[in-house]
Amino acid sequence: MPSYLETAVDIARESGALLSHYLERKVGFELKGKHDLVTEADRASERLIVERLRTHFPSHGIVAEEGGGHESSSEFRWYVDPLDGTTNFAHGFPVFNVTLALEQAGEIVAGVVFDPTRQELFTAEKGGGAYLNNRRIQVSKAQTLEDSLVATGFPSRQRHLNVNIHFYYQLAMITHGVRRAGAAAIDLAYVACGRLDAFWEFGLNPWDMAAGLLLIEEAGGRTSDMRGAPASVQGPHLLAGNGALHEEMVQLFGEIFNGKYRYPIPEILP
Ligand code: IPD
Ligand code: CA
Ligand code: CA
Picture 1 (cartoon, rainbow, N blue to C red):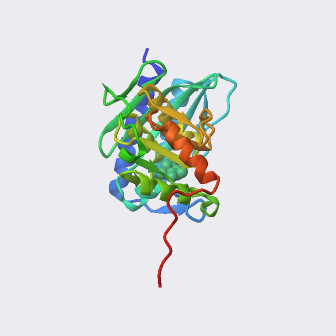
Picture 2: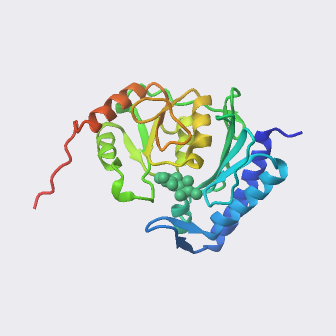
Picture 3: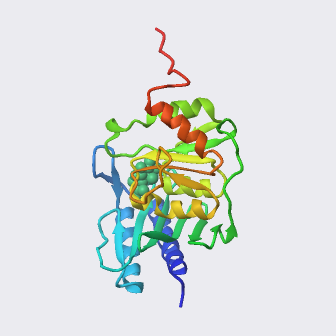
């Protein structure tokens, strides 16, 4: 019998192929909120994933972004993001993925992030390591923020309440650069495989980060909230990295929370 992870991989690949098909057809989008896009592809992918999960694991609960999931009394619960990076997808910007993860009794035990554009499959099982296309991956070895490439994201919902711009500027000044590619699960997978040294975002949802949390843990990295307390899949705030940078980031974030900026934002001169 295939493992939970193997089944999740098959489903993610099938959904990835579906997303690629929709991308070629250049589907339009609708708005869930002022800047919060959704497409036919999000919905079709979610229908496919939920249907497959129900067939394989009828007793498991499912939490899926577009609302197709269902509660259950089982200790197993799937988190599903049928299309992570919808804004990118809707504009034909090829950075998006499908991600699903399995929680058992409150602990993430399996996770998949599949990027159909690059045919990159990131997988992890609790205690079994993290993999990219079946090759073991590890977080980077960067020791200081000065030597690092980091990433962040800005959620579509409630943009006016998001304080991240303060953090973005300080990190942009200190590091080699801050990337904002628009697909949180890929950002987290990239931390796991060392392409990025750290990632943070205010206001993530469980389906954005469930697989990424496990990937990073299994790749030897560290995850927490913005102040260094243990990360929760419920979020909403996440700081994740290679471990070596964690204390430095928590310290820097603490300063920013206290209104102390190492680099003042330059004034615009007339
Ligand atoms: C979004 C993306 C984005 C992140 C947002 C997420 P979606 O997911 O991951 O990078 O900044 O917080 O909501 O809506 O495209 O699935
Ligand atoms: Ca998402
Ligand atoms: Ca999504």
